Length: 98
Image (cartoon, rainbow, N blue to C red; front, side, top):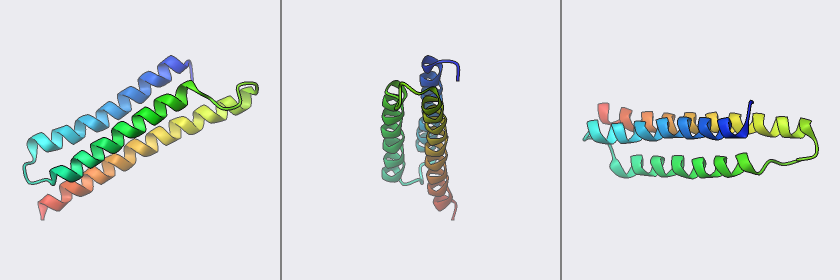
């Protein structure tokens, strides 16, 4: 990781892409359950806020190894959160195909 600034930009990018997929589905798929998609979008926004707050408040400021592990975990959590939201969105879209 180069800097916290770049990490925050990465968090913004990944979460905004997942959020834009939600709105894309709402716009172009009228059969989808809007309430469920808005719930997924709300979860994305909530995890975005939590990840940004975690990025600026690392644990173990005195130990570089702990900081490195903290940011590795943060990136993993970011990707897991986005992947989970997109899987839930995919499941909602698949319900309309039947």
